[in-house]
Amino acid sequence: MKFELRLSLIYCVLATLWIILSDAVLAAIPIPALVNTVQTYKGGLFVIVTSLLLYALLRWEGTIQRRSEQTVQRREESFRHLFQNNPLPMWVYNLDTLAFLDVNEAAIDQYGYSRDEFLAMRITDIRPEEDIPRLLESATRNRTPLQHSGLWRHRYKDGRMVDVEIVSHRLDYAGHDAVLVVAQNVTDRVKAQAALRQTNETLQAVFNAAPLAIFRFDEQGLIRMCNPAAERMFGWSQAELVGRFPPFVPAERSEQFLELIRGVLAGEPLAGFETQRQRKDGSRIDVSIYAAPIRDTNGTAQEVISVTADITERKQMQANLLEQERLRLALNKEIELRNLRNRFMSMVSHEFRNPLAIIASSSGLIERYYERMSADARRDHFVTIQAQIKHLAEMLDEILTLLHSESLSPEFKRAPLNLAELCNQLVADTRLQVQDTRQIEYSVSAPEITLEGDSKLLHHAIGNLLSNAVKYSPPQSRIRVELTQTDDQIMLAVQDEGIGVPEENRKLLFEPFYRGDNVGDIPGTGLGLAITQQAVDLHGGRVEVESEIGQGSTFRLYLPAAPAAI
Ligand code: ADP
Image (cartoon, rainbow, N blue to C red):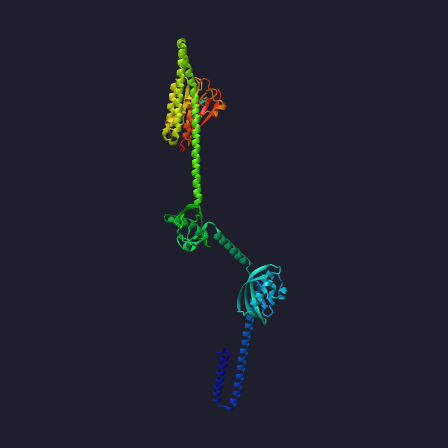
């Protein structure tokens, strides 16, 4: 029941009760003259009480009305505040005339028109010409109270065109049928979306046109997506591939494939991983795979994108090239060997011819003039013949050693060997040979200097250096032999105070049969250093010579402590 009706009814009941009860009290008064007086006071009291009540009611109502007026005013103020200070551009326009009725600060700020300019315009004035028919249709169409009108284009005063998203609300504005509009500038978003669309289209075009097979795999290795090149490369259609475990991974490589997927997801991208795949027709192809993880917005790797290149032809070509190169090297080696052999043979025959000529001449002389020749002359010729035979025998020995070490090279075998002991032995032998005419000093950095090597070859190599030092230095001079070992290298130096090697001879000293210009009558074959060089080469070492004419020479032999593989 309404408040006013309830109040009236209460008043009616109370007033009626007052009349009935006060009249009953009057009827009980025994003095008639007093009745009239009380009657008058009763009426007066009634008027006073009802007047007071009426006054209280009117005051109360006035207060309520004032309060509601204040509330309305406050609401209006906060609406204006919200409207004026809203960071989004807002305005109100007349739905009949499309003229702006009000506009907020953000709109003035962004669009560049002053408030007065806005209020003198229609909403069509901030649109590009071509959008106006659509705008008119949208404005006059049946409107819902709240309307999301979507994406529009607005033009600022300076001519700039922006994309805006419009939300509007129909309202009564100072008696006008009006619409409140909120326009949010979404140009950046629209541009970003357009750029994203373009990127997507580009990627899609690349995906479709790429000559390489591109796949997207999920965590289980199932194919999520593949491109036309993948169909061509492996022979299955996209429909046959998508959603399946890749049928082109050979059974024996499926575990490896899953490991690769797990590895890429864990942050180990693949770059040129080479493996084999099989085609639908069963044939095998060599492939090179590049793969990287695809991460979601949280940065978690969810899928793998892989690019696969068919490298079967390249592999085949590489194999062919390798084979060609191997053949070419073998042929070159063969040619080189043949040349070497020829050169060697011509050198040998040349070197043999001299002593043989001497032997022939001496023996011829003996034969022809035996009777007439004195015994001394005959002996001289025999001595010459024997010396030449000795020389030939030595030469043969050294040639055989050289040939032996050359033929050893392919299957050169090593055994642990104490070089300190070997040198000690060689120095002792040499001392014995020279019989106190020479002082031979020997120093070694450790009692054991071991390496893996061929003792026979090293014996020849070091023995040659020692015998040369003796041979090419005067009696009573000093010879120093020094053997040292550093971390990874062994060094043997043989130093003499002999004739030295002329500078112009030093380069060719290690060539077979080559002898220095200053050797004079000192006998020799020119093969010793060639043998030394050969032996040291086989052990992965090197020989160096330092010399000064008339002062002496130092031959240094370097060997790796752990010899390099041959
Ligand atoms: P050979 O000593 O039989 O002539 P090698 O091959 O041992 O042959 O030496 C080649 C040449 O090197 C020698 O003829 C000599 O000219 C030179 N040569 C080698 N060792 C020495 C040395 N210690 N002092 C001077 N010259 C040397």
